Length: 499
Picture 1 (cartoon, rainbow, N blue to C red):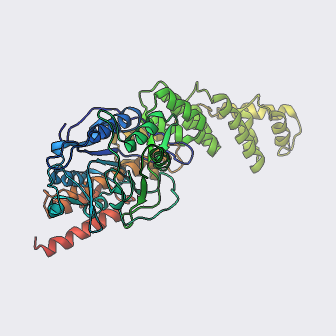
Picture 2 (spheres, rainbow, N blue to C red):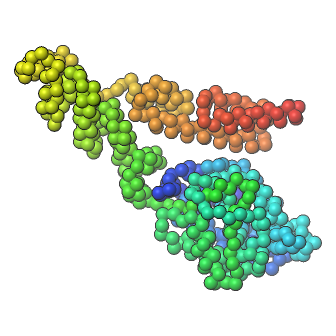
Picture 3 (cartoon, rainbow, N blue to C red):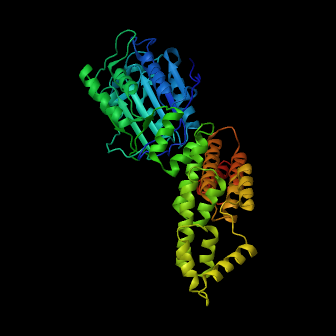
């Protein structure tokens, strides 16, 4: 397969449990470099198989798509193509994406400097210019604005390749990380048997293959691989964090691909509105999608616990599974309002909505104090007159104006349409969803600006116009400040270049 060879695959829902909520919204990219058949250096037995086996494991069991792989093997892994691969990733990886890089081949160490050996490099210190200085690799890593970058190196003297390191207890997946795992320290490391895997690769593959948890963290993988390799070979894997590379102490997570049923079971166990909403959005064709959406709306309504929110839920789900609970909560809300405001109108309202409710006797007793007559019959006659003159509001009712506006906003599916809806209906049950869509569209647009600006072909004028168009389409967007900085920088560069 060529450097940009694409493999088909399917990515599962980004399922994160407990502290690792569904914050990850991007892609998992994979950059693989494996060299067995060197032109001048001794051949290796397992390098290509190691990286290919790793790709097979993560694309079959974990949330990696084969279409997001760059693979260089043997004759393809020249210095030019290896560095070009880093450039490609810097252009397309966003701060919502993750990147795993796996190099398996010869390493070299001289004059306190580490090197990767490309396939066509000559042997000997005099060939240093044909090696890839790992300081260059580190610089290339710093240009890739990922959420997580995890570099795996299986090469001799690989522990000397990264000198700028710092250790820290890992935080959650929400924080950025720049981590490195090497097969050894300042030592020669084992290759492996013909047709097999190196001890280092075996440790990684065994852990990923045998894992039965919904996810495995890079920290856990590193610890297990170190223990495995130390028992199998005379080498000690090492790990590090890059400094000056926007590492925030986070931890990359390998998430299993789970079935619809498995994910739904986890959503039910979590039982949060965020989990149900995420499932409803990302599994629109699931048999559980309608249930997830209804449950989300019910949890929102019950959390707000207002007459409006509960009535909206019942209006939208006449035969819904939570209607009995909603009606009970709604009666409590009407009664609480009646007692709180203590007016004849509120008691009348309760009695009209719930003529057989559990507080009817108390409501009638409370209402009598507002009447000069203590005649129960007079109260009943007044109630009947009230019902005749102003029929009871239906608990199950539509709100055509609001719902029509919401449908129109969704059909337009723009930042402005959702913003206008939130301004027109600030108390709507749809406001939360509208704001989530505004945030999502804003993020997509700002990433589009970043990618467009990073592309060398467009002129300064075209790039600046792209920023200006963003402001028109996203007034008040949360990423306006970021795009403004980009625009200002472009303006300065255009002036300096006299364009």
